[in-house]
Image (tube, rainbow, N blue to C red; front, side):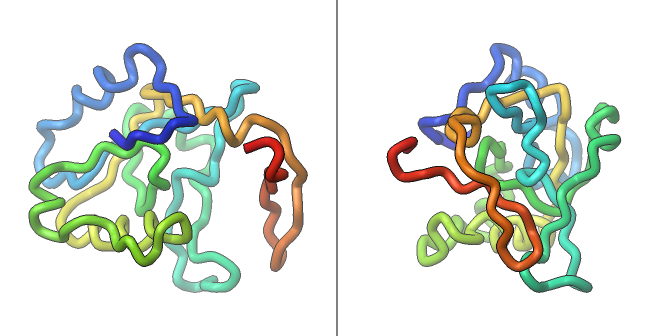
Length: 152
């Protein structure tokens, strides 16, 4: 799992992911990302939609999918994703040149070439930075939470 300093896994998060780690053809496993207020941060687990490449190619996973025990997804942000060592050996590490901006999208596209990425909805990580408040801003037709610098 990543070492993001603003994430806090629930006590059983890794255990719940581990139950699926021996499945065949798995590149990565992902937790549900939850905000401090208990709501799911839907923009961290997505499907890739190449029909709409502007402003983003990611479509957030619909809420009803979180009721399933396992969901195959195209993309997971780097907010807690467990990547199979064999997948890393095949595709390498994320591109450092993309750091913070779309490094996760590019890497997940490569992961899909060597296996599936699964969301395990009952494995939960709390994403604390995203819950610190901020302003909803509209950018190119999409809503984004913008966190003021003083909140970091």
